[in-house]
Length: 244
Image (cartoon, rainbow, N blue to C red; front, side):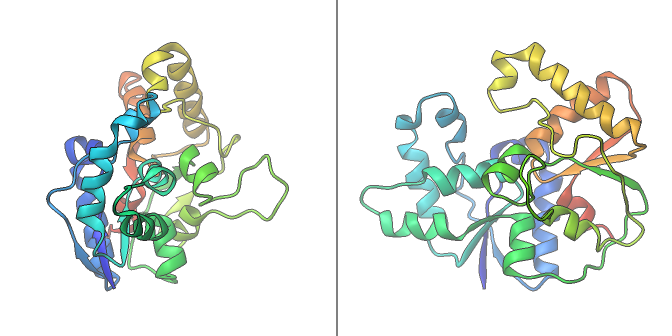
C-alpha cells in the first residue's frame, strides 16, 4: 500500500522528531511511505476561528498533494478529524472524498488497517496516557467514560505491546487538558487551570512520562510541566512505539 505522510504545521515547526518517528514506524511495519513536500496547513486554525470559507486554497493544495495515495496517515487526531469532516473541493470532489474516507490518525491506522499484533519496542517507564478530545470524541479511538459500553482504547492497545512499559491508572481518564486550539488563547486562565489539573492527575499517580496522539495537547501539558519544573516528560505515542 502507498501511504502519504501528513505532518501538521506545529509538528513540522516544533516537534519534527514526532514526524520522523512516525515515518520510521510505518516503514518498519512494511508501508511504502511518501511525503509530499508541497504540503502545508490543512486549514483547521481558520475553520476553528470561524473562517472556514477562507480554507479553499488549503483544501485544494491538500487534495493535490495526497490524492494519489491509498491511505493518508498523520500523528494528529485533530488535523485528521478536520480533514474527515471539512475537506471539500467543488471541482475535484471525487479526489477529496477519497481522501476523507482514507485518512487516519496513527493509532487507528495501526490497529484498524495494519491490524498490528506485536511491536519491537521497549520503554521501561511509568507512562500516563492523555486521551485527546478530537481523537476520542471525534475519531472514536477510545471509549468515553460518560457512555455505557465496552471499554476500549487503540493507543492503550498499542502501548500494551511495548516491552517494559507500565501504564498508570488515572482518576479522570478522559478529562480535557484545556488546550482546545484557539480556546487556549481566548480563555487563557481556564485553559491553564484545566491543564494543571490534567498534569496533577498524572503526577499524583507516579507518571514518568505523559503520552498521547495529539501533539497540540501534549505541547500544552509540556508547557505547564516546564513552568512547574517537573521531572515528568512528554512524548508522542509514535516516539514510544518506535523506541527500541
